[in-house]
Image (cartoon, rainbow, N blue to C red; front, side):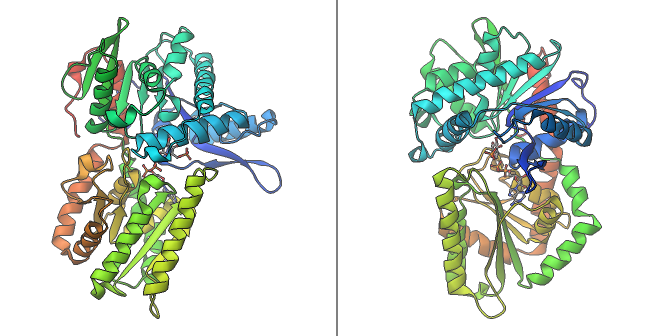
Length: 493
Ligand code: ADP
Ligand code: G6P
């Protein structure tokens, strides 16, 4: 499969996600400006639409959208720059609060990451969620031009869109992909709207998950809760009949534009930045963490592990430095604000204890960084610490490998990141709750010889390259729209 061609290329692709890849905001003169959105979904999908064109339907990240004319010109300009068109879904602030900050991010996000104590099961949130899913469905229905359009709905914010589209009598095939984990039965059962969620998911023609673990959890929930439905089959895609319609259930590990990252890593601009970064961090081992601010990412545990490594391996003093970059996210939710304080407190405590003249152990940036800076940091880092408590995939792990063109970096990876289902053999796998275990992995990485590092990194890069984002899109679309499930290739999971 090449980047540019596949057998479904002639069909128009309509991507639907909560967030558009550009987020609108006003500058200090009150003019609208478009910024790149953040997070794994956008990193993965933006190059796909750029590559094949199409339409992206989503929320533009603002509720202050009275000036429709001014906004239209922003989107027209962006369409010219990006090579595909945008259909913004404007939502009133009250709905954004209850649907996005509420049901999506205080019910589904924590529950699906096995963190049910962080959930707020307010019934108002559920009502808003249904309403917004109906609004999205109406927008999609208005934008379908042909039965051959490929409609592809993304992520946990929009599980009910398929069902709402069926109520509008849409007959086009609709694919759905869940970017976050699907929880085990005993956790899913806690959701007060568990039947409604399962039934709405089964309105899609294809339900895609990141890993076999997620798909297995979903199948178990369906079998336990809806005993008239049996999901059958073998291989990458299973299937069942729901009200006379075939529903497919598959797993497809999402990825990145590998070539783009690898190419960028070799540019002069990145090379120059790598030299500058190395000059600032003369210590032998630079350790990097890059995350959205989120409690699922295991950042405090990682910092405790770094401290533990300094305590238990005192010879690492002045030899290791850590750069932790955190991009702000979902700031209006108290759990996120609290996490920010927790991280800052821990970092200042660790630096307060261990700093020596000429050496500060942890450097912390609370900001998004651009692609050149990010790639330079990936290249400059000797060790990437990717330790989510649970994660759908985790693209940072894959970006680190793709950018590591000199093959000398070590990836320390949580066994609960979806990425570990592909990278487990060649990364140093850790349990993100095991502070001493992570500290030992840091120490092991610091002492690993160049030959072993190269062998591991070469193997990691091979996997990420082979199953890149274009492979993912082609595999998913083929699985939704092909008539014959047997034509699908074997699973790389
Ligand atoms: P999630 O989707 O939960 O945020 P992923 O690891 O899958 O987690 O994706 C995160 C994406 O956001 C990656 O593409 C990563 O490069 C990007 N990212 C994370 N933190 C930053 C940052 N501080 N600056 C720029 N990009 C970031
Ligand atoms: C994760 C989710 C995405 C989401 C992203 C950023 O990757 O799976 O759907 O867009 O985080 O979060 P945000 O709430 O800012 O959209």
